Image 1 (cartoon, rainbow, N blue to C red):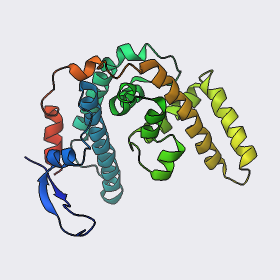
Image 2 (image 1 turned 90 degrees about the horizontal axis):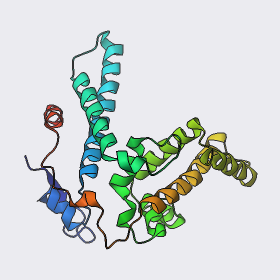
Image 3 (image 1 turned 60 degrees about the vertical axis):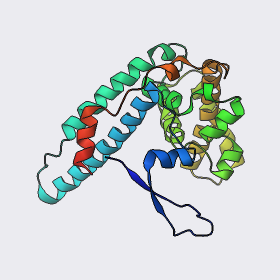
Image 4 (image 1 turned 180 degrees about the vertical axis):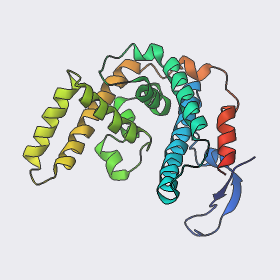
Amino acid sequence: MQVIDNHHPNKKEHPKLTVPLEHKKHQKLHDIEPNDTPLSRVMRQYDKVNTISVTMKNWSASYQKDFDNTPEIGLEKVTLLKKTLTKELTLLVKDDLAKIHIKGLGPRYLAGILAYAHPSRFPSQRKFLFYCGYTQASRINKHYCRRIKPIMYNLVGNIIKAKDPKYYMFYLKFKEDARIRNGNKSKMALHRIAINRTATFVLKEIYKIFRVDNRVLFCSSQLPKMEGLNPVLKVILDLHT
């Protein structure tokens, strides 16, 4: 089934005028086509399934509170598919994970970064950080990849829990610096400031490790395309549309 978007031919002069346009054509028209590699496709599937899983768990918990029983809504199948996709991601980044040694950096986090913002796509570290949302300009303009921010927030949180020798000390230093400069801010605000600064340095290390000459396509982009989504995911999506 073709997914149709509402396209605005002239949003500035006629903001309410829309025409139906196939989703993929709409993406191409606005130059927002997703990076199409085996890793990015599995990662996008994982994100969709994770969203479905969280929603279903919330619905199930709410239903349980109101009616004292839990309906059968296929949550077990979604959980199983999520585990399957996690294993696929782990296999896809197994060799890449061996190149970087940061405690708390698991395969799912690295898979997300490389799927949505592989350093090979960017001619400079500055543009890489801009795309990820970790430069002053990207924060002001709010033009950055919205998928990287939550990945980095959770990743740095994991690094702090694991007490990585390098980045845990960075986090403590940045938090103390933020406290000295912004003593009136809450503990959570100071924590977020330190998390963001630490994330910037983690991304810089990832960029240096995985950056290759733009004239050389990284091998995953040359692999054959996998047609369609996982069959189990198709069934689940059909049930919820």
